[in-house]
Image 1 (cartoon, rainbow, N blue to C red):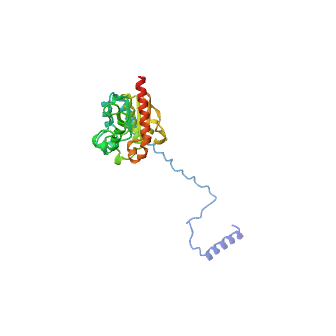
Image 2 (image 1 turned 180 degrees about the horizontal axis):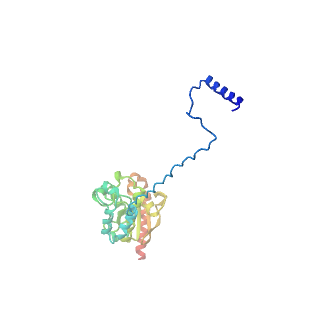
Image 3 (image 1 turned 120 degrees about the vertical axis):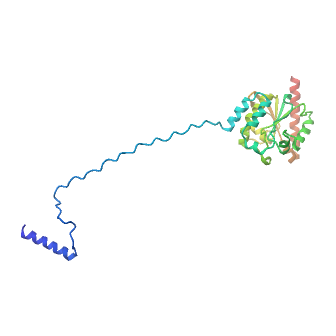
Length: 266
């Protein structure tokens, strides 16, 4: 080793001692120019086999309530079977009502009147339009010579009373409309009278209120074909709004003229 290089190394050692270095990092000097041994690569990690998802049980398809109601209604071959099918239909209204309110009057009369839903008296007795509004309806129809024991037939869109006599919901109307259409098909009336806005809008598929729909004949599409339908005010509305009885009387006169003309044509 040359003397100059040796002096540089000693000077470097003395400098490290002055800085406070008092130990070596390794016992033997490291030859940094020697070839390093290859580092062994870690063994490959084998991927765990993919877990197959557990097979889900195949659940039977359950038809929505409206579809189930339509199937029950279509299977009814007479009015007694239709009443039993309505009683079987799954509806929360069935659990809160007292009696199923199906119909009253003469099914063969050719004139079918449709309201919206039973009230408290109807729910108690199991017959439509037997409360105060029904008594008013009987007097109104008697004024043009019609009697429920001979000349017309009564039913509602809903067969069960809504709690608190509230207005039927769209879902409730949708559920029971197939039964009503089958009811019409079995009775085969020549004319319909739609009592109140709920009945008129549901069967006419209209957005207008009863004050716009009343006073004229419409066509209701039924499974048996189109039927003429007169929209008029509900008697319960007339009890709350006596001034509207004039419009209701005009509707009754139109009904009477139409029935007389139909009888003359036959």
